[in-house]
Length: 287
Image (cartoon, rainbow, N blue to C red; front, side):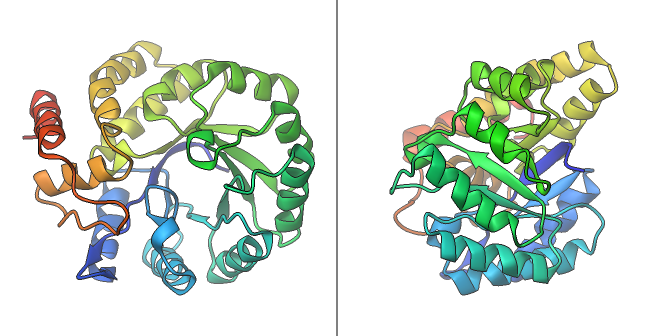
């Protein structure tokens, strides 16, 4: 069910509030550009600084705006299992096609604690996409834990953002879970060993190109996919000059698509990095 290019959608703000009009506009742009799915309320969507009511509202708006044209995988994770349960249950009730659930952060559960956390959420009955991003959470999931979780019927995929091809190799050697890249610059290498797509930050800017790369690989057009990969690579790396989503929001602002408003503790990009980002956008031909 979950393969191809899924955009890790930013959350637009205006004067401190979620800008629902802009959110709908961004969704229409993404769908028109051919993405295979939309992922609101992840790290790129600044879920960490959304209240639960705001997060639920964003999920509702996205589900309604998409209107089943592509799958919606709603970010519903928390380091508190009961909070993650509430958000995941809401995503199911709102009509999301899946829930993206980050590994519990800060309290650093053991592998058994991770297993019980996800197993509890799986009881809700919505397809679950695990999300392993140790740079954010301070802990990584072992491939063996992922393989055990994959035996649960509705735990169907993992967004793997450890930056390790060895991790992906171990996951795929132990289970048949669908792997989606969580690192734009590693999407093609991950797909070369069995991943089925990407949850992409850079697709906020160039959704058509990321979708073309992924679809080209899935169709066996390897040279075309490789060509697009090398063209995208500098842009992908530029999205992490500073903490995500500062660069992608800044890039969208430079392209005239967004006001670039962030929520503290995230703040405006340093001017020297803004100029580096501008140069990359120019080299790509976007400016």
